[in-house]
Length: 88
Image 1 (tube, rainbow, N blue to C red):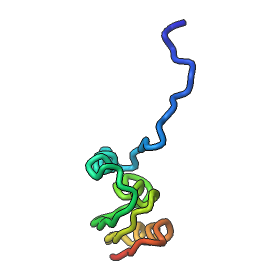
Image 2: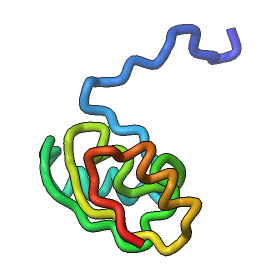
Image 3: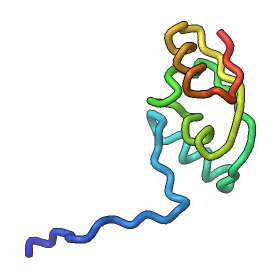
């Protein structure tokens, strides 16, 4: 054997896979002690799925306000964040 691992990696239930550009969502999750609900205001929200600091928080139950001037991203936010308030 060449030191290769043959098993799959097992993640704990609280493992967070980052959706943000630089792992900001993971850092915020740690700073907030893994809180499962809350409220956010995302200025310049961008795409709700890619490079999004609030994506993971929305998926675990947080809700908030997304402010986004780009009409294409605004439409995408309305589609993927039906429980959030979306503003241009």
